[in-house]
Length: 265
Image 1: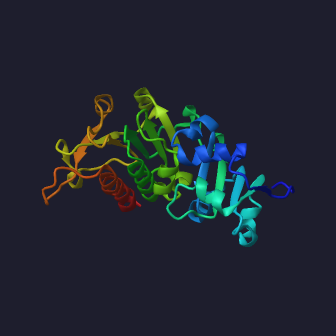
Image 2: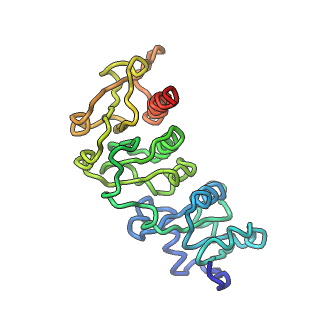
Image 3: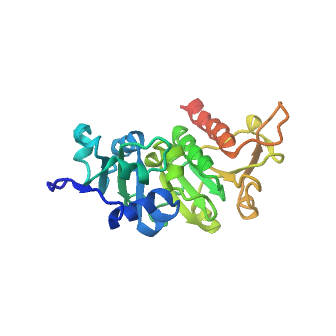
């Protein structure tokens, strides 16, 4: 932590604040700025618990005097914004009073660090930010260690995906913007899902560790991913719906894989 006191910003035209506003409201700005924005005590706490340290801790002026000491001392720099300015940058209906700016380089590993034998989730053009965040949360909860997001998938570190992930990001190795050929780095069986093809999930002998691929909300898994599949499964739906939301399907499938590990323990 720096011994320099907090920087107070009271002008909406402040250049640093303008960059922060873009970061909080543009889902792809983190790639341009190589920084990630976390808003709210839950996400900030989740990052700190996983050993992530922010570049900048940002506080609303009314919250700063009562902010937890560990939060005010965790970053290299502290910025205090007038409450109206914090509300202006917030993407939440009820603006939080604290946020962290993180260095993207410390969060995104190089492709060479893909773990060939790790339990893996593959995202093939899953486009809804809420779905992607929910899938990350299920992946972390059910013991999957890394996520490979192919090109066309929603930006993993966007504010919306971060909020939906509820801190799961910091328990996973996340790789994004990948070509499908990067899947060839994996040395575990690849399982794909379909709404109407393959054997029923509950009737399969599932391999674990494995890589589980979830596809585009409307089109499903693409041909290039399907061609690499060792097993295709579908989820029994006795109620007769045509298909499940991809995030709901992911939770069911990843839980089934986790139970394989639990049963053999």
